[in-house]
Amino acid sequence: MLLAICFTSCNSLKKVEENEYLIVKNTILVDSIKVKSEDVNSLIYQKTNTSILGYPLRLNLYNLAKENPDSLYQAWLNKKPNRKKRLTKLLSEKQVERLGESFLVKGLSVWLKDVGEPPVILDTTQTRKSPERLSAFYNSKGYFNNSTTYEIDTIDRERKAAVDYRVSLGKPYYIDSLSNDISSKAIDSLYFLHSDESLVKKGDQFDLNNFTLERERLTTIFRNSGIRNFQESSITFDIERDTVRASDDQKMNINLNIGDLRRRGENQVTTSEYKVERINRINVYTNFLSATNNAPLDSIQYKDLNIFYSGKFKIKPKTLDDAIFFEKDSIYRDLDKIRSSRQLNNLNIFKYPNIIFEEDSIRIW
Image 1: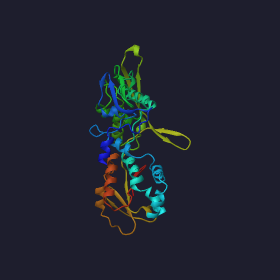
Image 2: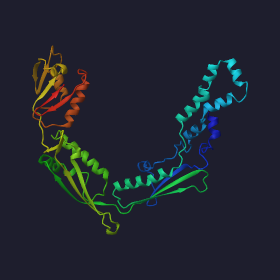
Image 3: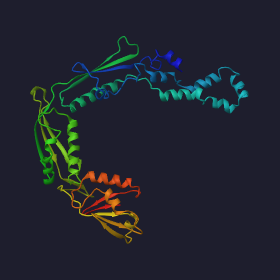
Image 4: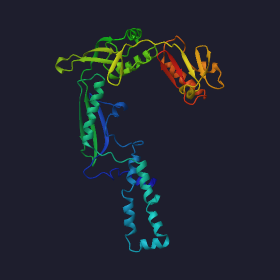
């Protein structure tokens, strides 16, 4: 195998047709500077074949595979009139057929194709998509007036192609002003309490990723500050900018919108103001089936927990109390739910512990 690879190492074009080109190099030039960032290079649709220390091992393994091992075997078997007859006498007709499915005849080629890598053939349709993707990426970084082109170099390259992608950025856009429109009083108070930690700041260059991270940051804060049912989709940004090249104005006005809670019913969508929720009661049902069948249950109270059970109660109340992080009269926090769920699972007492929030209590099954 190693010798075969060595003999074919210079024949990476073995399965490249006469009218095709193997892509051997992609280069991204941003304002004439070569970009080595993997994040940017990953945007190219057609990447070159992988290599190890510059050697296309997987491509050459693929090239070793026979395209039609079944047909080649049948052609070899019937090339001489008596070959098949002699093999049939020596083995059997069924074994001769199975020989065509053996690893050395067919399986090796299948394996080589599985572990190998087909040649990346130049496809101009795919090539044209890459500049569009590069342009969208730099748009997200504030370069709204960027322009992208590509050039395919096949000179002095026998059935090989190198593709250069060129990006002209233009001037970046910056955040000039920030405003907000928040419907809920509770959300408004929480927002301004944590506004100094905002990832979208006046004077910063526009970066779409910062807006995504800011939505996630605010959602985490609200859900850990009593807003149990806060929806990330309630947060939107209005972005005003002038992209006319002649104006030469790279200032942007950002308005943060946080709307009310939206609920979709059968025939309509209703909205209601977000409010801080507190834990009123904590009910723990240790037997799910009994609780859902309205069977009579016994109960005990331990600190903030109302524990309901049927039959003999075999769990120490303190064990449940230590695993549940909610406290009566405290505000709701996503963090408490995550920790409680994890600890209840770790007890290995309940099959499928579940936490359900109702209007005036928590049920834990």
